[in-house]
Amino acid sequence: MRKDWIAGALAACLLLTGCGAGAENAKNTETSAGSSAQTNTDEPASKEIFAMDTYMTVTAYGENGQKAVDAAEEEIQRLDALLSTGSADSEISKINAAGTGQLSEDSAELVSRALEINRGTGGAFDITVYPLMQAWGFTDEAYRVPSDSELAALLEKTGSDRLDWDADSNTLALGDGQAIDLGGIAKGYTSGRIMELFDECSVTSGMVSLGGNVHVHGSKPDGSKWRIGVQDPENSEDIAGVLELTDCAVITSGGYERYFEQDGTTYHHIIDPSTGKPADSGLSSVTIVSADGTLADGLSTALFVMGADRAAEYWRQHADEFDAVLIADDGSISVTEGIADAFSSDHPFETISQQ
Image 1: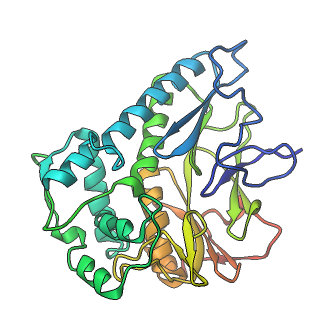
Image 2: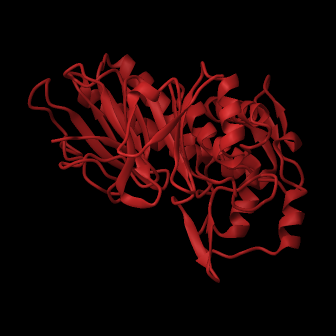
Image 3: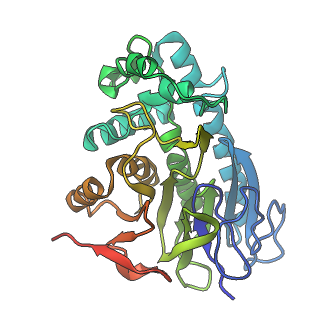
């Protein structure tokens, strides 16, 4: 009987028979979700949490497991309150409303990392696309197709290069008509913070699923590697393959995560900052594997926007930082050679080499 974590848009969940992606609020069938006590140190402490507009599961093993899970829940809620664009009281919403302000340590770290990823990817990842996301209705589900003139006007104000960021004082000033959203890296950053809390609590085996962003700590309690399924973009009940890994984040972005249809055309939520429209890159999903959750989160979006050829070239230049699984619109799978031996699939796949 196989039990695999699924890295995909809806959830990371264990299935009792085979692998597959379940509903967003699927229960963790291996752990006792939401339990408040442990019967012994071999049993996991696990809790389900709704925050950052998604269902999450945090699981930790060992005598300090419950302490670690409780600390993780507190940290998730703290970061959600700080970063959410859906709350007028959040720090990011206040910056957007005022156009300028001084950021706290966490927000400042995220802005710095976002600008770094933006520069490194040639603008493929950009936190200033938020007004474009609003125009398409992806922020409030009031879906619509903006006119070309509306998009052109918004694009004139889009671009992280228009932000005035003072890293010494942690002060950010937005350009005229700009607004930011750190959601593209917030979950990866949060999972990284939870791994730090696990270390502080001396947890040697644990994992967190943040709406499909999976981050594993150490190996499984029996010493084996975690099995993490990569969702099939065409079938939410199936997987494209399985990764066997330890100590890393596995984060997927796909056009199947959020989308709407109008006049026979499907529009997904991953916006290309250069066009203001859903990215048409030939990819249906990108899964990033990295020890750095923040980086993995940002690159899953950036490489999706880039497309397979540019993504492969970017990986060749940064192979020491991450690996990737790319699934094209035609269903073909490409895996970077750093994780090729850790990936298994019922489907044929190509290995992307550094040559």
